[in-house]
Image (cartoon, helix red, strand yellow):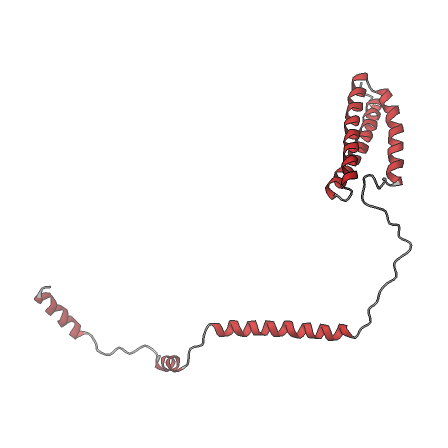
Length: 182
């Protein structure tokens, strides 16, 4: 560096005040912060964890004390309930409600098929035959795996599709016969 520049800098620095007083007296707060020991940031977390463990332990203990001396109450089973098997396949049959609904819809279907054109009748019968073939195949598989929940659900869905198909045919012919705009 250049000496002349350094001299100017030193002269300017000498003109500066050597003591700077803060606007307010900050020293007591600074002295206190220096003297006070610093707390670990882990201390609050450990205290909270200890409180949680203590709370869980106390509630578990109180629950144990409250329950251990009470006699166990066992209710007698209700005799007015009717239990039905939920599984299908070779060992089980469908409920009476399904069989009645199926019989009624089959009788109605026979009447409704007579009202359809030969092409439509053939299409409906072909669709019903596919559904009934699927039912037979699922039942055959259920004979080998009677506890297979997937097959049971599939069978139930296929039975519902058969009923829905039979209902749609009845609704279709009734709708066509009631139209007045033709």
